[in-house]
Length: 224
Figure 1 (cartoon, rainbow, N blue to C red):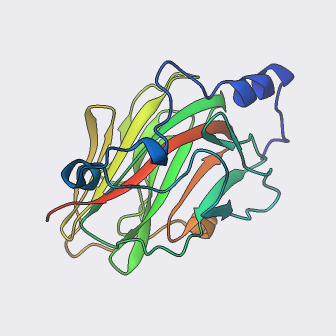
Figure 2 (figure 1 turned 45 degrees about the horizontal axis):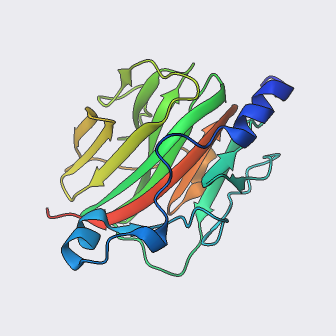
């Protein structure tokens, strides 16, 4: 693996680049009506600090932080990640996670979302293998670059993308903005994570040799 490289300009962009014309939704500003609140789900990130999260503890990873309403994942020698560490239970099926993510610097995945699938876990990879591969790691021991969920698309630097991951007993589905990138039948399939990202279980977000920003992390129940 290459040595750590993080240009000063990229660091400055990471520290000030989380803001945009669309500010993060603070938990205190959510609509109070029950139907709307249930449709939006609950926030997993307060936009202020890492309460409910912890550094994943990958070897040599830099320390994640919060800046301008974003979880900041600095450029690392390998993986940088945060793992959900709150007392609230995370569902294992019939749920959907949404978040916004952007790549600030680097050429590999800027969002590796690890999530429960029944009694196991999987990861949705956004921008891996040189910056363009998306997919699920792993299905029947084949990772996101080598199974039926593999897709290739371009991701721009400093652009926010809305990521949505849906888990039901029979399917895994995922979207980037309005584009569906995963529609996988998982009945009878082995679902697992790659060993190198297991520290983000049961729920976590990681990047690989890439600086990233994450915001508006939410979870909600969905009907089967």
